[in-house]
Each structure stands twice: as structure tokens, then as C-alpha cells.
Image (tube, rainbow, N blue to C red; front, side, top):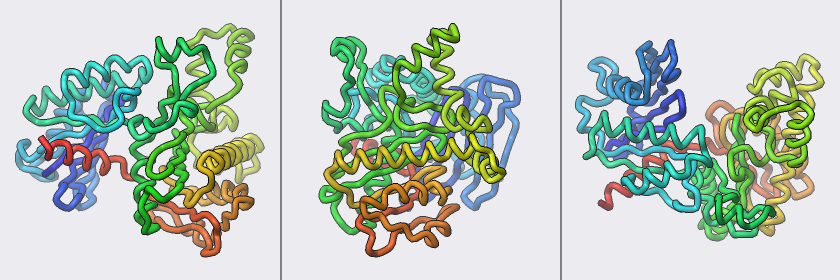
Length: 402
């Protein structure tokens, strides 16, 4: 079975074609600048060759046409006929309380994704466009599966997901913590249990997905008991451009003093805060690191705040779990910034974490492995996340059961 994995954004469309007989990636790529001038598709073949082409993509349907042309290309393509694609799996950000697992996409499921769009206004509408465009290009007979970012977090107890606002807003508007990056947390927590040679049901694991968008999750017995992101991906600790959680009065105070609208405040918190807002340099950690190395105080402060906040959440989840067997770092920064891991683990020495600094510094750029000394009370591991493979496996399993 060959599964096409799709992650549709508002102006982008990432894809991977995976052969599930051996889980090999046949092709992967990204359509960018959809709906604007200069749109293009970049993709990598199974043998690693990189191809980039300018092509007009006014909408997601045209983007899917570009994907189809890429995977069918006589010279660079991965398949000879579209019928070789057995199923399509879609990443969907917001599944609300409706979906606690991946599901076959039906008219009813699509209606629910639309209904939840106000909770993920930048993402769910793009996913809907992607699903509809996929149907236009591949036809109605190719089954499609939705894999939700929020699904893994639906095991959280009420005390963890409720907010202390009038209860009517939960009943009327669904205001609660949903959590995100669930597919990544699910993958690395299961992989951690496998590496430890123990059933997930016996373990307490804290997974740290640290990238431009970041979240930390407490997993007990294979189930989520708490996570950092909330109603939206803005919650938790500071990120590339997101503020993370803060005193709500900061919002009203700034809005009142600066005469800002709700939308302007939202843009400020989502797009102008975090590493970018504090450092004044960039949302890209590589640029912030370079600035810090040149003596930029605000860049150094941004990093100190980030390390401190990550350690705070790990500490709080240690208490929530009643102990911890393992901590996992993953995603862009988690996988490639040894300094981040070291500085966070320095705070965790009081919990018995003993980082092997030499191993930690050498574990970057695709390398994985145990980062702690043998006598560390908590094992710290770097595991490269693979959300696309989770989506492909779920799609295979659901379609195979039809």
C-alpha cells in the first residue's frame, strides 16, 4: 500500500509518498506561496535528488495538481500511475473534543472540521481546502483519513483541561485546553517506551517538542495527563514568535494604552512576541544564537527565559506525574540545539538528571540517542519525531479495516 501524507497550510502544502510495505519514503516535498506570485514546488526523490520548479498555484487544487505531476514525472517521479496511491492521510490541527483518534473522512467528519474552524482559524480552513482539492484531483474513490493534532491529548482529566473562567463559556463555546503537536508527542513517547524495553503502561514520560512552535506533554501509562498548549497553540512557554501563557491583564493593559484592536493584540502575541519580541533580532534561533555570541544582551535574555520556562514546565509535570522515568527532546530546536538541552537539564539536576555533556554536544543533525549518564535518575533522550509516519500508519490501518 502506498499512502500520500498531506499537511495543508494556508499558503503551503507539504507531502510525502510512503510505501507502507517497508515504510520507505518514495518522495517528499512542499508547495509554497500558494495563492501568491512566485509559487513553486520543491521535492526530493527516493534517492535524495532535490528538484525545484516554479508553477502557478492559485489555490490548493492547483497545488495538488503540481504534487500529482511531481510524483508521476517520467524522469523524477515515484510512481507510474495515480492508481498506485491507495489512500491519503491528512494532518488536521483541531479536532476538538469530538475526535480522540484518527478517522476516515466522511461528509459528517468534514462538517465537524468546519465547525471547529473558529478554534483554529489559520489551520482548519486550510485543511478543508486540502481535503476538497484532494478529492477533485484524485477522485472520490480514494479513501482519505484525518489525523488530528489534538486527538492524543483527549485523555486529559477535567482538572487539567478546564480554565477557571465562568463554566458557561465551556458549555457554549468549548473554551478549554485542547493541546497540539499530539502526533509528535504520541510518536516519541511510544518510541521512548520501545527504547527502554518496557510497556508504555508502566512509564511516566515527559515529551518536549521544541521548535518554532513548541509544547511539552506529560504522558502517564501511555496517556496524556497534561500538556502546555491550550485553547490555541499560543499557550504554554515562549516560542519563535508566540508569547506563551502570561498574565491576562498584560493583554488588556497593552490594548488600552496602545489603542490596539483585538486582532492587533492577537497578531502581536502570535507573530511579534517570543524569541523575536524579546531579542529584537529574529524568530530563528540560529540568528538569536549568533547575536548572543556577539554579546547581544536581549538575545541572551531571550534564551535564558526560554530555558527557564521549559524547565519550569518539566518540573511541574514531574509533580503531576508523581515522578518521571524519561524526558524526550524532539523537533527542530530539541533535536539540533545542544545548548538548549544542556541549559534546561542544568535546572533539572535537583531531580537527579545527569547529562553527559560530551554525548549531548555530539548528538545533532539527525543523530539520536541517550544523553544522560548511566547513574542519572531520569533518562534523557533525543528522538527525531516522525509525524508523517504516524499519519501514514493510521491511514493504512483505517483503510485496511474497511
